[in-house]
Image 1 (tube, rainbow, N blue to C red):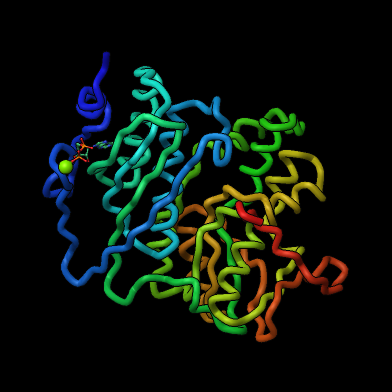
Image 2: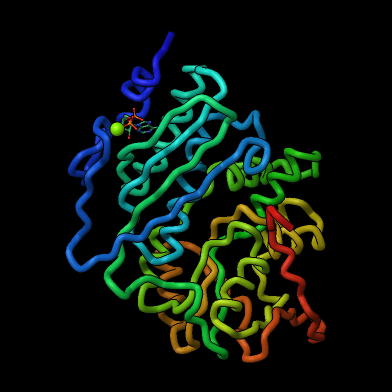
Length: 318
Ligand code: ADP
Ligand code: MG
């Protein structure tokens, strides 16, 4: 019989790089850098709600770390530490080893030390807490957008939603795109380097987890302004190539969820700086709209007509 302590020793104890005390005591000890604030986030993944119960364990471990690291990226923070609390129905050590491998791999890829957690029996549930650092006063919040700001999004939102539809109900995907979409869903790449590069450039930001339009509405609400998105500027090309259906591609880009791209607002005089960041990181950044004074979210269609856009984000309690 494998004890909780064996599991912790074998799978959850990893070397650390910038931690005073890691796994093994009652608490971990970390030392934030001088003049930096600690930035903290928690995200829980519940089987059946946030992932399909038969998801590959290694990818599930990766995603559990990635979604937390993405929240730190969205503040412009440098990710530093992470903990993992998990409840498991039974001890399948092969599965646990794969989960731990994926979680550690993602953490290491972003320079994050895995410093503790909790392990208990129960329905499959994974909860990570990630800690990052940002210079005091330097975090990029949701509340800083102004009327007249440009609205930008990174990468190719919509692919993860297509991957999910493909797995759930067999939505057909182009053979060349299938793996890309499923990877976008199961192995998201948090935009840490972009978040760091946007410090002092973007003045409002979040990571897109519940759909671009719905998440943008959070920025608008916090910033007390509205927005007009430009249909012709949406980064639709990849989603459209993947599913071959323009309407579905647009729905997935605007309201798909699980993208973990960064959505941010910046003054128009920052366009050159943002273009340079895009080049330097080799990451497409699309300028998709403008913040406006009247509240609400609208879409300027290709024919020039402006229509109201229901946010349609994902809300677990709606
Ligand atoms: P306590 O009884 O004091 O809560 P535990 O027995 O739960 O301690 O944990 C012992 C050590 O193992 C602690 O350092 C804890 O952070 C670590 N630990 C437990 N579960 C995990 C996990 N899933 N990942 C990383 N560390 C873990
Ligand atoms: Mg204790």
